Image 1 (cartoon, rainbow, N blue to C red):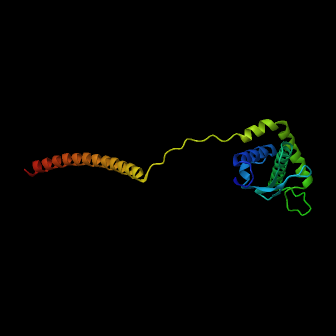
Image 2 (cartoon, helix red, strand yellow):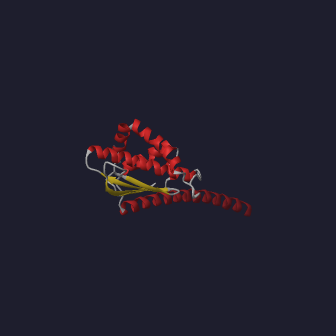
Image 3 (tube, rainbow, N blue to C red):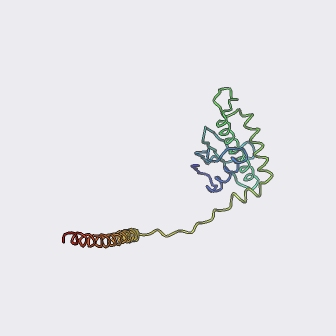
Length: 194
């Protein structure tokens, strides 16, 4: 999944949240080609702090920001809800649900909200556990030193030398065998010539 992120949340957090939502919905994560999380305006205690849009294999979530712990919790709730909502639209596009009046697929808002509430209820049950897991930074892989150009070339030369030495050894063995046979035939022909 290609992720475009201009929010304050780290990429690994958003990837894990999207992956968890997809699993809850029953949508394979590999089906999502692109996800955009954009920064919106300030969040107020009323209304929602996030909005979104979904297409066949991609979605966009515009997310507000907040000051204060209570508002931050509200913003996180809206982020999960909106992400789940848009992923349900993607899921219904995939399932070819034509419950919209326009017939374009993606499911009606009523049908989408039913799925979204199930996902959000599962999030509320495991909220602290999930947020801790999503916020865990990924383990840093030890950096493997890259060989220099000279080291690469030296390795290629040593492999080529070993290969040609094997061929030389085989050629020397063949030369010995055919010299031996040539001597035999020389003697045999010399004996017949007498």
